[in-house]
Length: 219
Image (cartoon, rainbow, N blue to C red):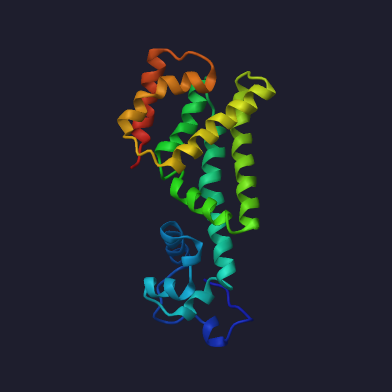
């Protein structure tokens, strides 16, 4: 059930009988607009036309456009930021396995959606509050990766710098849209592990991890 609102007309507070758009439908449609054309394109009337419902039905799920935009930011935190923090916190027998858990975010868009991160960062160029949210997210993600390194015996400063290098390298990779094939990326795994850990993975470990990433790869 949606929530009736007291600050909109009665006819807007009652969901139109013909609407089938849920709160999630509105949110996903808004996210697609954000990804395609930026935050300025996220407008209630345009969304209603896309969903094939009355504009008034929007107010059964959201107070106003500001609340919808806040929900988009929350969805971004609950997907992209949470994916990295969860993956970094998974049990790992070695630092190589721990780094691979994070790499899974980079190859599996059901975990982490790089286009959404890019859209939010573009939005942050126009909003100080969104910029603040992006800074918080970056700090949270780096801290999670740093904790992974600490658990595997790295000292505080080394763990912090390696976490920043691993994380911000991928952010830059996404921004540049290099478009490498999965086969090309898999060919670099052993070298990436060496670079990000300062340790030498065995060939057997490298091949095991490549198999894991290949299985998780989602175009």
